[in-house]
Length: 246
Image 1: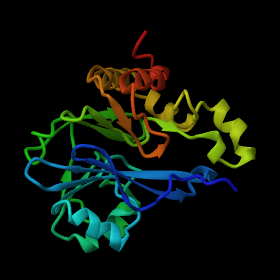
Image 2 (image 1 turned 135 degrees about the vertical axis):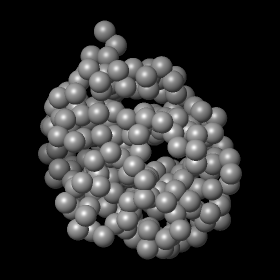
Image 3 (image 1 turned 90 degrees about the horizontal axis):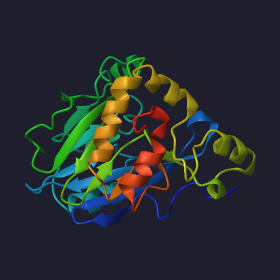
Image 4 (image 1 turned 180 degrees about the vertical axis):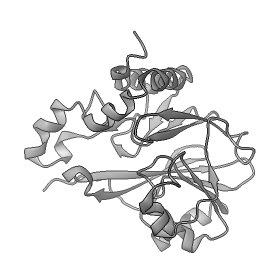
């Protein structure tokens, strides 16, 4: 079985000044061994902002806390929230920010996860000096909140781009992943998610165009090989299925 993830796992990896990633996984979603990734930002006030926290690890917690106090933890869409409860138990003072509609999900209500604030298109005062944000809508209550760290020109997504390297995937899955354009150079989300987002295609395409217009140097996302350079061009290519750039 090839290694689906990006070792070393559950450790901080610097990306730019004030920006780190944490690779983890694999997850078993969709019958695919998915690598998963958290993004860590140090805000100007010294506080730490966690995007889509991965599985809790005590050593990782200590390493992050050494950067500054963990003040914000973000569930950026309706799928990326399951590890938050463990982090919340160890960081009870941190605010948990949720994508629109996450609070209404039955699984979330049953989990006991405390959701403190709901995200929208406007960055809250807590991080408006560091990050811009935009909600990308879809049907069936899907929403994903994208973030742009202006100082490093880093765009932070979750599932809007998925870029699985075939060599890291089981051999029998590779033809399907290529056919579904979930591999380089396409980097498209799974077909079912594309269908869901197309239910709000016009609004989603407008949001996608705004993200490309930010001209990111790099694009980080939750699953697969992220875009370390040529971010705007590669993002435009990955989101062309929305018809935003005709």
